[in-house]
Length: 271
Image (tube, rainbow, N blue to C red; front, side, top):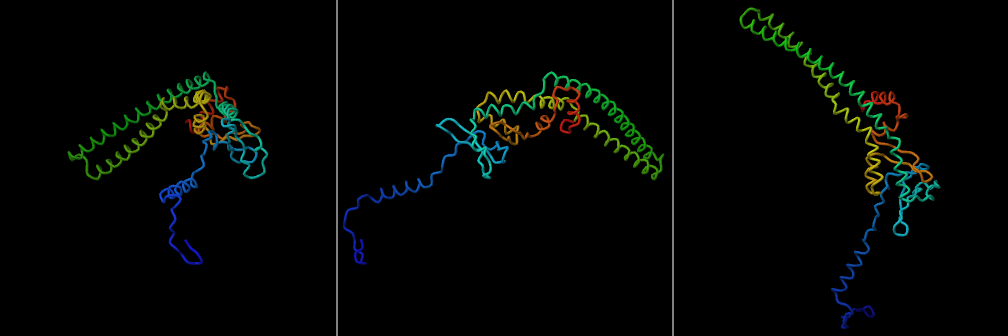
């Protein structure tokens, strides 16, 4: 203790022990560093305000009801006053699949038509490949015969070198053509066509799954489908789709057989 500027050794008993004092200080220190709990709202991060472009955030009311609203980060938007229930938002988000849906019977018709075209194309490719392979085989025979003639000294060395080089170059060109046609044949494989068909059919199945799931699972589905969705007047106003769904959404008349085939043929993603 200190008195009149001079220090004296204290003789009184401490109120608490040094150990208890240290434990209390440790508890107080930890409390000052406790992180605030972050509630993982399902749709936060994929929703934007159509009016100002700010992200939508969420809050929980009465301990159970979740509401979404514009953050109004620019201070110019009235949409932040409109609170949207998570369950209403979930129903509204279910509508983003509607612009991707095609009639299954129509898809099957287009698939069968393309399959027939593909079979005709593959038949032509097979015929072309057989012709090229036959020509290549003939050149190989001629090359072997030339070598035999040279070894038997029936062909001068200069003539052999010139003819051998010519045959090799012609064989290389044929092999290049064969490789190109074989690549085209693989690209026109039935499996590729099956995958394209499944791309058109997928949104209907994904929507069924979306409507059955909880908001957390719904967000996972939306993340595979959308870049983001814009909200206005408590409704989904605009949607930015990821590929290949962006292409599907831009096909206006989804019941037009001829149009659907043209869209499929003209898009390099499905070629």
